[in-house]
Length: 289
Image 1 (cartoon, rainbow, N blue to C red):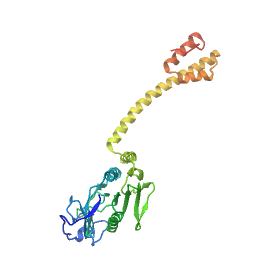
Image 2 (cartoon, rainbow, N blue to C red):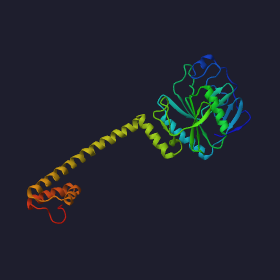
Image 3 (spheres, helix red, strand yellow):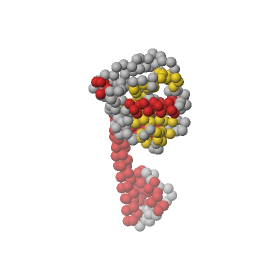
């Protein structure tokens, strides 16, 4: 969501960061409060960075759609031991409590029962300041978030924060720790690719309902294949019989007649066998039926 500076509203004073909480938060030390210890009231549409309060404004349609599509793909790609989330507050430091547009974090709680820090964070950029988003990313990187990305819907690009700057990516985001398969960047920019990415992710997870449908489809296919195979086998046998009769009777099997045999159904082939046995000649005109 877009941000605008605003006076504090329903803010919590920073609580004491116990050493037991801080010690079990990955990528953190005793200088940081637990990631789920709040400064702002949850659901209040506010963030705090460096002690400055920002009101979270509603998104325009393009950004809202892009954020929804991003979440759609992340929820599907996340490994079973991870969880995707949107607009979830994270305590970045003593004076910052921010909500990334989307993230992926471990499901398992810390030893103290709190939430673990995100592994992946995504921001969606539309009309808001790149500098504002970058400052949030810096805070989260310092907190210990492993990888951070920005989806620029105006430029139709995806970039990763690497060594202090944004680096545009080309095809996929590979992260075998969090994802069941590489994330194709086109899926974050085009709806049709998002559906494809989600379908492939669900197959990679061997989602039970899909596996059951596939098994049923395979069984139906096996039955059809068996029936088709028997029918094809009968056709091949009839064509072989016709060819043998023609050789025995001295009847030329021209390319035109071979084409007729290839296209004829089982009923017509049987009729031709009868014709050869009875009249000992190739029928004049159309194939018998």
